Length: 224
Image 1 (cartoon, rainbow, N blue to C red):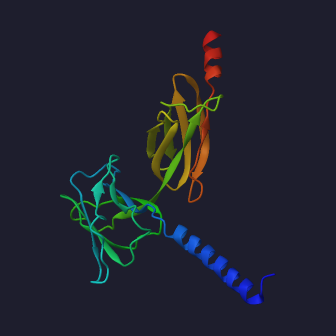
Image 2: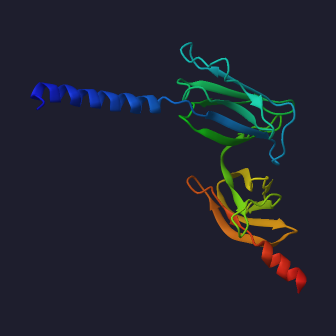
Image 3: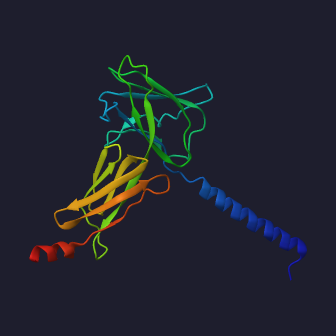
């Protein structure tokens, strides 16, 4: 039989290994930072905009590989996937010809990619620029056999009149960065009947909308 001292040592070892494993898992790298769309007050992309980020104090150091770059979507990415976040206070500065320069203090989120739309004010305006949080509306379009359906047009219309569009890829996946609020979502393709979701509320924690479509329905409709 094990002595009390031996049992205690084994228990300590188990606790150490558990904590070590948990800590190692917690230190895994992840994607964090910001995705920022720079638009004018009409919601159109501002060409030639420049984004900069710098530390507020000497202690706030931005890693060399964390700098604004333009993504395929036209948004500015200020993000990284090495580590879990960047600690410190930073100043975000956006400028463009014909627009007022915008500055804002930011702190990097932990293991989260936050999306924003920055609407700059025209030169000479005394109004504040808009810096609005966006959410990634996404999901999968699939048919009766649970197979991905590519080429579906997904359109989200908000009460403000703004319309956002995306097309499902070969895996049936679609995504779009949209504001918070209720939207009418319409899914269309020549091979399926139109599908509508009258009031889908986009908010933190509710950004997934999967869409089942019916290929046989359209086929039966065409025969009749």
